[in-house]
Length: 296
Ligand code: ADP
Ligand code: ZN
Image (cartoon, rainbow, N blue to C red):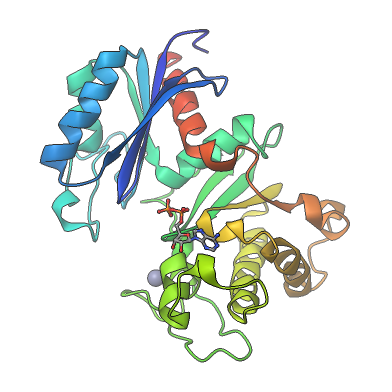
């Protein structure tokens, strides 16, 4: 571990890049948000922020898709993103060359999962899933204490779901798939379906029964596929905290009594939970990712 060496964390989103400095115990000393315009404009600003602060290592979590294979020629690149000016952008190489310090690279959601795993709601557990329901839907997965990469990386936001009872829009709004989780349940999908921003729909609006159904289908699929010790649900849409109770109950229904763990069956309130670090999961994860580069 890095002791008290100053570290950098960069949460790279499609609309803004959050840069922060701090320590690997989660202390955040300073944070700055830089708009995501073009790589030519944005990358030098990011480099300048961290150069000025003099960090010993940096952890980046990026929107994707990204290349996470360390033996690849395009390791640390953003690859085929719908954000066209960022297609094939060498995100990690540019910052590593500018800063000349070790740089760790992850998906944005895996970085948040690392934060939750070490310092948040997943502390002392070895396998967790962190799902964010916001502008998109994505999941960071820690299995046996390691972030899961797989062949490319998992894209749990595009799980294909069954239409909820009463569904009038079963295709949803994903340009790639009919009936996927993100297309049915992310913030912009809710807004397209109901003609109003998700945050303006009252708690008794029918939107939330559908939303909870889809998130419960996701949670039960997560249990079947990955068997994590805890599922953490974050992101802007989960500010609707009344969703938790409905999701928990419906997840139990969908599991159908097949998975016999008391940690789920008797303790669902502690199995599907909000993030322990609130909005800081990603930045905390970035600081930890940075400190892990010093230990390599
Ligand atoms: P991002 O996914 O871009 O990192 P957020 O996690 O904040 O950002 O998610 C933004 C989305 O969350 C928007 O689509 C917005 O409609 C939705 N959202 C924000 N606040 C609320 C709220 N209180 N209730 C429901 N949805 C919300
Ligand atoms: Zn999709």
